[in-house]
Image 1 (tube, chains in turn purple, brown):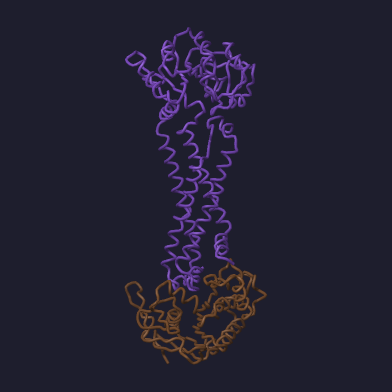
Image 2: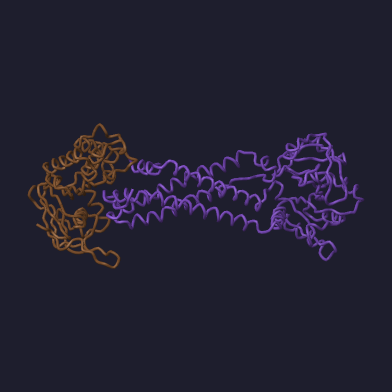
Length: 381
Length: 225
């Protein structure tokens, strides 16, 4: 027998309790990992390869305010700008769905492919998208969900404009970080609503990353002191400001995480205390046989740490497998796209488990250290 | 070694604080125990016999006086030194056996050796020798719950012997045994004493005390003869 075998036998002496302890740690850490993944997904939006070269321009007043279409040639003339496309939220309802799970945007197909470089689609399909005003392209996730295929016709009733538009699916794109959206020709939208000369936002591609700061500055400056002042920013900054509109989601999820961890520590500490308390007599015998405080503390710590880490392997490891190998975008109807368990999240999960193992061992270890052999031997089994 | 004092106690006292009341468990005890002796401590409940045994074995500390075991004043050792000293010099046999229920007889006996630097083969040799001595070689891989009370106590004796301690202390080792098992265990302790091991045993039972080479009576914390 080795010390390791001794610790293992002690840890597994009450198999039901050990199993339940491990499962409670595993489930809690799975939940914690899930919350951290969700938090990351919501606060660190996924970036496509083209995002680094994209600038989003919106009304300085509010994203709900539209911009005049006449701004486009002014933006196009700014040095460093490679392509400009309108990007207008259509807000369409599909069939009788209350909340449609894919976004629809009116864009300029001629310039859009230069801006949306990560979206992969067959040249024939894109050509049809460019030439047929009613054509649209749909992301793979949405196409799979609704079983759309090229050639299908779908109707969307806008909740923003007083129109219902019928679209012909020209092709299915994939390869972007969010293959859910539907893009259609902005001219089709303009014709349908009487050409008001407005767009929602501008989507811009700059030539190089070096051009980003001065393009952003030039656009902001170009419309300063006009009736339609704009706010130009990188795509990432735009997404983050968009997320901030949801409120302090970081604080909200952070609070839930804290509660999960705190509850987990209480449960684990209580379990370890019970497990050790019922072995006081045995621990007193070990003391009598010559085991020192530090050795008994090592036994308790190893047992507690082992149970916590085994729970972490199941919980955090399970979450890693699910979010890495599972089709989360499909399972969540496309609400979560990347669901990435980053090394930082893995580290956080195992750090919590380690802390749990250590903290829950402290109280029983102190009790054992204070226990005299004589008093320990008097403890009833 | 036979005939030399292995334990030498001078003016030993122990006072417990129970609530706000001082309770004298031992008062001014002086005693010598010779190597190879089988000393039995008798007395009514609360007479201090177990306390005396605990102090000699280094698991309790006196309030005053001196307790030398093999010339080492155990009252002056710190917690860690005392633990090492116990491991090397004292074997314990308890009334309720106190075997670890999840370990086999072999593993229970091996337990004190985990603190030594012995290799696995040497440990195996010592454990097998100890189990042979108590006649339980064939039960080595049984768990305590698969053994009778008498067998459990013999395993406990094997555990006490496995480090070759100079002193064996037994606190009412037959208190939980039937008469036959008690007789076997006492016979075993007597044999060990005759082979040179010093045994100190606390008992209520005059029949058990008769196995010893000397009996000391305690009453109200003092030696009565």
